[in-house]
Length: 458
Image (cartoon, rainbow, N blue to C red; front, side, top):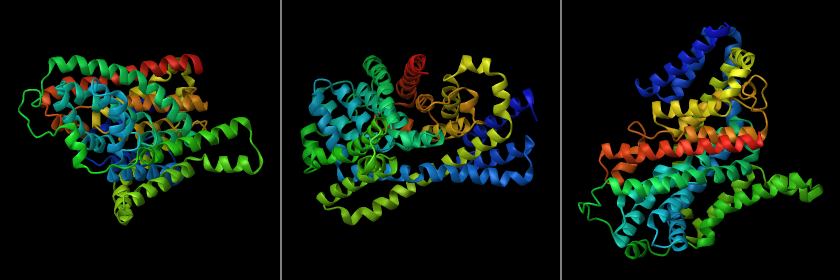
């Protein structure tokens, strides 16, 4: 199969996958694997080679990013269960001040969601939001939108959140997470700025039950902190996040400066994502020991594995789809029309991810599936090669574009939409004015920033 028929087949396959997940309630793993197999047969890949293609696509993902995702999620669980996430939030409030509660909520959400899933992060930080609102009498809606936006931004852009880690690994830059983190931080700034101003704007237009005085269950901020007892030490709370980043930074510095001998080997070893995140886990264990919670380590690990298991399998299934696409001749057809693709460029992964996100609801599924479709920069037959995105920096910006699409948009088929509206005491129709609209604006702001950066570095 070749030409326009191949392109139409691909579009139908993606549409069928979206329908299976969003309308027929088929699990994303089964939908991805089923569509991959069906697509391989329809496009005429020899039957005897299909099992090998499926196996290599699946195992390749596990070998490159599986351990990294598990370690990153385990750090997040430790910070959540020990109260360290709340300590980080308190530090942000002290830094920003209580006169700007919406800014404090946005920044604390952005920090906490780097290792912690945004859904969990919102639940953890919502009591602080309510307490600050009661103390400052600021708009509840503005603070809800700001908190949601801060959490969502780092959730889709900054490792060690599983989505960005998975995308980086699939695109072939899993060993360069430090650069992904730095660019993710920079790209998140426009998103945070847009969300901040929109939160202030919509806070004047929409009123929640809290703003109307219909919710009286919130504590005062100082009373809330006392109710948690002694929180962990600030430096110890930061260590599981900061130290892995520093380790990866030293690994990158060692490579750039071409350090040799024992010193070069040591920092090259320590700077790999697996070892850097292992350092984070070790300091998480130190935090558990300081909080006398080491006895709960087994329980935390089991909980983490239950959470990341589906993500790993969905990511691996996305890798299978990417392998099938590469083997089907689709990329060769796209390369023949490179002039058309050049006009789309970095916007292509954003559009695919945004379509998947809006259709089926999960940012992680959208990110990992799109990354699988794009393939690795190391493979000449990948979509990355077809688009001319073959450098490490191009791969990093593609991760960012996929993440920007993965936040566009959050609506009724997204579990996070209901977390935000329910905890924020918002009516569903107001959720579209707040959560859905802010994620649309954030996604567009991120993508425009990525495009502008690409003009200078690609």
